[in-house]
Each structure stands twice: as C-alpha cells, then as structure tokens.
Length: 266
Image (cartoon, rainbow, N blue to C red; front, side, top):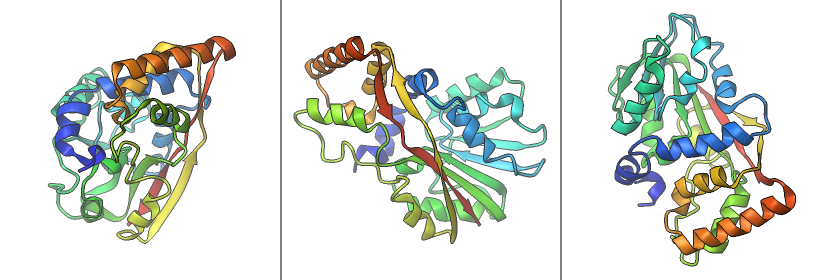
C-alpha cells in the first residue's frame, strides 16, 4: 500500500499530531502571492448554506479552516469535525476552544460514516480524499449522509502543485520509493472518480504561487512531506546548500501552486 493511503502510517507517523501540517501551512501563510488565504477562499464556498446548516468535515486536521474563519461562522450552524488521528483532533480542539464557538469532535473513518441518511447540508473533505484507501466507498458514504440538494466540497491539488520542490527531491533522492510522488486524487484525476458517484460536479481553481525568501521555513516544509521521508541527511544537506545559494543570488525562490476544489451536488 502506498503511503498516501496507508492509514496506519498516516495516523501513527505523518499525522500523529499537527507538527508536519503546521510546517506546511506556515510557508503558505508567509509566502503566498494571493492576498486571500486558502482557508478564506474555501470558506467562501460555504456562504450559500442555510443559517441553520448541519456541516460535517472529514479529515479536519488541526481545524485551520474554522480557526481562521471563526468570526465568519453563523451562530446557528452545527459543525462536526472528524479525523482518524487522535492527535489531530486534540490539536483541533486546542485551536478552537479559544473561539468560544461550539464544535463536535469525533474519530471517524470516511469509509464508514456513523450517521443516518440525509443528515448533513454539506460535507467538507479538505485535502484528504487522496488519503482514503477506498475512495468510491467513502464517496458513496458521503452521498448517503448528505441531504437531497446538499453538497460535498472536496479540495485537492493538481499535477503542477509545488512542481519545483518535487523536482529537487527527485534529483537528490538516489533511491526513491515507486509511490514517492504519486497522488491518487488530484484536480486532474478526481473529476472522473467523483462522477462515478455524483452526476453534478464543478471544479474551481485557486490562483496562487509562492515567493519564498527564507531558507528555514522552506526546508521545514520539505522535511515534513511524505515525499521526503526517504531522503538521507547528506542529501538534505546538499539540497539546503543549493537552495541557499539560489536565495543569495536571486533573493527569492519561486514555487508553483496548483490547487482548487470540486463542488459536488447530490
């Protein structure tokens, strides 16, 4: 099983807590070119929901979506945040307890959602469907728990996302795993997967790139990624020296971003 969908590895290693995600979010918060942040843009997709909407987020992680938009959440929304990782749910609770808002927190596998048919107005899967071993089963479960007319918001990345970084990793890693750079649910491949279950799917692109001016957050990002876990310390040292030289010469490192979402109606 590839690491992207190995639930044991994901919950006990990569996402046992929020440290790796925090490192990746930090570089986007600091060096993105789009003045509207990612989580603000995703939240905008929810603004058409009813005032008393019932919302389920699968794979909520540290709940950045809700933390960054806490002052925009309507008072009568009911929000259930779920994750397979206890460490992530703990981080989510810690990030949101200070908001004074009420949230439910549950450990749930998207492949088996313990709610009745037609429970939710919307389900959110923010950069998580590529971690689900049986996506068709999960999508069927999502469709089941959505109300008629409800929607799934599924975000992911495209083939060109962070392509410069993955190019560096391919060059320095002498013995990459076969699945090292494989993402099973992208903006390119996700449409067909969603259409197997839902007939009405729309795709939206988020326009953004990175202009990185500091080496430390860049290296922290690289070290945190699944694709970098097999790279040796000497290989990291070589890469850091090369990127530091580029920063010294050019003043910044440009990195492409390619992300967006599918809005899926039941």
